[in-house]
Amino acid sequence: QVQLVESGGGLAQAGGSLRPSCASSGRNFNNYAMGWFRQAPGKEREFVAVIPSSGATTYYADFVKGRFTISRDNAKNTLYLQMNSLKPEDTAVYYCAAGNRPYYSGNLYSPASYGYWGKGTLVTVSS
Image (cartoon, rainbow, N blue to C red; front, side, top):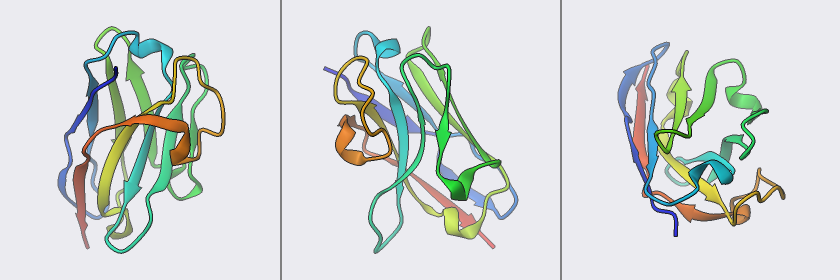
């Protein structure tokens, strides 16, 4: 079982930075693909970034490329999302998620590929 808890959201001004994190209490954190998704009011949940279990490659949604960086510290069982050059349209609840099973490598852009979710952390960007 994988349990995920996000923290580090908050309020930032446009152009500023935040670094949400996601702590996992499950075993074998390093064996799971880990992703970040977000959901703005009235909108569907959307993919932001993913780091596979290997950690060798990362993938991003076009709207965050060059601004956000996903990383993981397997020794601390923690996932991070460094968010720079924030925009008001980045305002959303950000969720971390773990893949359906260890070493899962399906469509990691889809929420359906993730079996474990945190409760989310709110990021608000003011203009």
